Length: 299
Length: 329
Image (tube, rainbow over all chains, first blue to last red; front, top):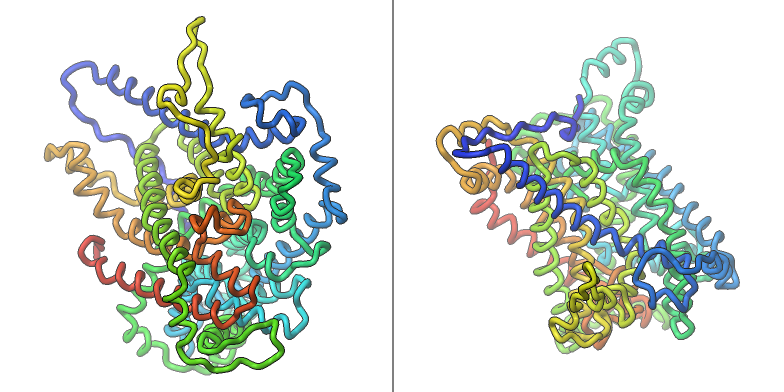
C-alpha cells in the first residue's frame, strides 16, 4: 500500500574494477563531493541566517556588518516592528492563521470527499470529470481571478476571509484531490468489500474505513495547504486591502511601501517572525512534504 | 505517477474507461460525494473562465457604474500596440526560458550527486529543500531585495578581503575591477536576480528527481557495467531515458507556474516592475491593469492571452514529447 519510494534502501554503487588504489580514489572523490555540497548548502542558507542575525542588530549597523555575530544585540527591531503600524503585528499573524486553518479544514473535507468518489465509485462522466479536474492544475489563476473578484465584491466579501476560504470548501485545489486519489487507490479494496458485506454504505465506508487509513495523505494536504496559504500574496493583496484585515504577507509588503523611512531592522525582524511557522513545518513536517512531492511529482 | 502522466494515460485509454463505467444504482451517492467539487468547478472555475472571456471583449471598468459595453477585439488590438505589454511578455519569456531550465538542471545535477548512497543524504536533502519551502514567501523576496541591493550582502561579499596567515588576498571586486552597484536597481541585472531566486528554490524538483532515480532498478546499471559501459554512457543510456518522463512533467509544470509568477517581482520591484519595465512580469502588469487601474476588460483579455499561450506551450511540449520522452510500456 505504501507509495513512498524514498524509504527504499540506497542502491550500492556498482563495483567498478580499478587498476590501482580504488579506496583512495573513492575517498578523494567523496571528500570533494562533500566539500562541494557543504559549500553550496552554506552559501544557499547564509542569506537566511544573515537575516536572522541582522534582525538583532541596530538598523544602522545591519549593512555595515557582513558578519553574523552582532557587535551589540538588541530586540528593539522586534518591538519596533510589532508596533510599526497602527495595528499591532499579531493582528496580521492572526489573520493569516484564520485563513490558513480555514483553508486546511476546507481542503481536508472537500478534497477527501471528491477523492473517494474518484477512487472508489463508478458513475457516469467520471473520466471526463477526472480529466477536467487534472486540467485545472494547468489553469493560470489570472484567468479566473477577475470574475471571481467582481462576484465576491458584489457579495460584499472584500475585507473578509471568505473569498480566500470558501473556495477551499469546494475542492478547487485539484492537487490535493489528485494526491488523495492516488493514495486511496493504493488501499486494498478488500477493506471496502468487507465493510459493504457488513452493511456499511458508501458514506460509512468512507468515514470509518478509508478516512482513517488516509491520514498520511491528509497530513500532507494540511501541511501543504498551510505553506501555500501562508506564502500566498496575490489573493490576500486584492481581497484584504484594509489595514486591520491584512495578513502577515501583505503587512510585510507595507514595510517596502513605506521605504522612504525604511526601518530595515524592523522589516527583517517581522520577516523572521513570519517565517517561524514555516520553519517549524520544515523541522517537524518535512517527511510529509517530501512524500507529497515525491509521490505526486508536483511541487 | 505525476498528474500529467495520469492525464496522458487517461486520454489514451479514455474509450475503454467510458465503456466500463455503466450507470449503476448508487450513482447519486457518487454525485453527493462530488457535490462540493462540482459546485467548485462550475462556480469557481468554469464560470469565471467564460466570464473573463466575455469581459475581454468589453470595456468593463469596476470604477465606472455602468455595465460592460461590448467592444469586440479592441482590447486585443490595444494589447499589440501597448509597449508595456510587449515588455511584460519579453520579461516573462526570458524568465521562463532561462529560469525554468536552469532550476531543473541544478535540481537534476544535485539529485545525481546525492543519489547512490551518499552519506548524509537526508541532511543535504533537507538543507536544499528549505529554500523551496520559504522561497514563495514575501519575507524571502524582501530578503532578496536587501541581499542584492546597493548596500547588500552580495556586494559586501564581493568586497571581502580574506586574510590568510597575515597575507591579505585581494577581494573579488578588486580582481575584476568591480564598482559597487545595486543588482536589483539596474535594468540589465534586476531580472536575473529574480531568475536566481527561482533557481535557488531547486529543492522540490530535486526531491522529485531523487524519487525518480530510486525507481530505476540497480540491475540495469549492473548489466551495463558488465557490458563495459562507463558512467557517462550509463547516464546517457539508462538514467536519462528512464528519468525523461519525470523531467518532462517537471518542465511542463514549472513552465506553467513560471508564466504566472507574481509575488517575487512585485516585492522586489516594490510593485512597480522596475527599474523601467525590466521586471514587469506578465502577472504583475495584469495585476496593475486589473486591480490598480480597474480595467477589468483589458486585464481579462490579457489573462486569456496568457491562458492561450500556456495551452499552446503545453501542447507543444506534448507534441514534441514523443521524440525525447521515453515510456517503458
